[in-house]
Picture 1: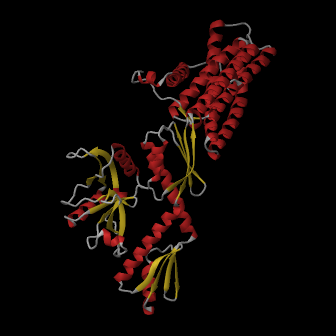
Picture 2: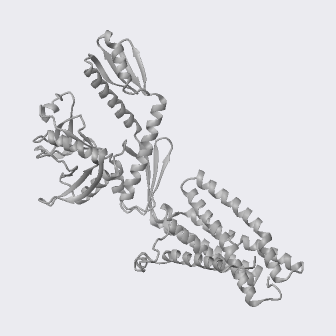
Picture 3: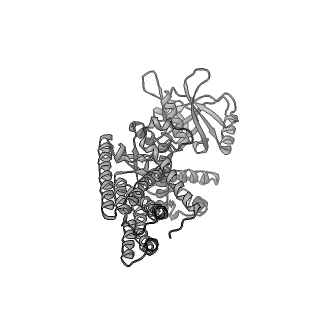
Length: 525
């Protein structure tokens, strides 16, 4: 235990040096960090919502919208199949959690049942007289709601990441809610606007068999719908368009979207690009409908309705709609991130000011400094010269914790600071066990080398057991906890690992180095 191979010395000193390099940016301002050489690590510890302020949002996913859209697609499928088979029907529509239709010819009920059964074999099909229903089972409802929430979390994460927010907290809460915490957000209203849009973009043909005035009078043709736009008519009201319900190209096939400027008008526009499947559909649609208006619909509103001048075969295009630069950037962001499967409703919103965070950081600093000084003083009083070795290891331990938090970009919260303060006290536990064991060996008459060797070898099992049990508890807190509890678990776990390194490896290296150079006849402990 008192022999160190050269490679071990190099590894120990290398880890300490790397820890100092990665921890250094935390003691500098952002401007000073940016001025550091390119090879120098520049990551700083990310502060949580309670330390640097920001926004706390609780969102509800409108999962019923997903169910409704699926049922409407079932209704469309039923209509298509019955028309192909030339089966007459009536009262086709959505009833609760089912799609239902009445077959007017009793002789064709069995044929209709076989056709409709193929639309979704997982749905519950029920025939009552001439009435056929396709109902969603409880499992189907539960699975679709869960999938909608999971997809919404992923889309929210993409949108928030695009805004440049560092270390957001995005968690599922309950069956249909999402907890969102945005540390350091200086424009929460923009984030709320981005989250409030479903960003479901589709491309439709306009219905040229009627006019918007006729449709507004109540004469909307079957298979068409009346949609508003951002444009204004002569009376200052939103211009209306009669749009065919059939989706010619879906925004799901978009793979890129960027803000830009029109080469002729220099107005802000949004360019987009489809994948291979979307590009083929887009090209086929534009080739077959040259000279016809083509509506671009976003969240139920026509944002542009240009006339197709020529086939667009490259799989890319642009959207113009009197955007501001910010609106073009936000729309491009939404399209890149993807459409939400269901609308989000903000149930709760809280703003945390940076003043609270500054007070928490100041209190945490005071607690850390007082705890460190008290621990250093105790070790020197209790163990004299050997206590100085333990104190040096304690300082290195704190540096390594900061370095690890910086490298991992773990979010530091107030409970995390509490974990660091706790680690400061725990960091010298191993040294206390080792030093006490050395004292016992000295009392039995052992030589300094023998006492040091016995102190480290016989205390090792106890040190590993005590730290391992604490680490298991910290891992359980991280796995089963959430939010601040996880922050505490992360800093505690890192502190346990670094304290094991500094106590077992670094302190022993210092003691052995001193022992070889001083060759004492008695241990000053």
